[in-house]
Image (cartoon, rainbow, N blue to C red; front, side, top):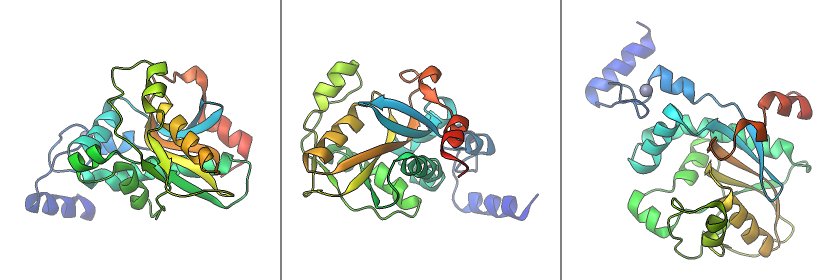
Length: 231
Ligand SMILES: [Zn+2]
């Protein structure tokens, strides 16, 4: 047994936990679920020609860990999830045509979701990665749930959902969100930034839904590195 394991066991006695991905005892994340969170950044050209860099496939263990984090108060896994998001953000910045001066625009959580959870998942992840992003976008109005809607309806449902906190002239942004599903959320965030005079150079999410963005639409991270040079 390594010292690290011994310390984890001691910690488990003081504070019983189970794995956020599979409910295995005594670990916040077991080895298998930690392994599932190793980032493999792919770029999805999904949203009005905007490239979205995404680090994980939203399925199986990854999906369960993210759901535990977002819906079941498992903020103890925020640091582990911050790593793939940070990789996606770096890839989105590296893929943009500009050199430097890029800011992060976090997709805002709705007031209702904030009240329900008591935290803003995306902001928590960016902070977990050491970021201190300014508030660029605000939730302008309550949006209905997206779950039962088709792609067109999702875009329509979200129109006007976000507004920039101030004028953004001359500023360049990478939009940051947790999960890429239909692209409607990122599309609406981009609209809000451009309406305020800002420029959107890319987007990054921790994970993407493979059902909506199957492999054939994705440039693998190998292609990506080949195109951009070693990182
Ligand atoms: Zn597990």
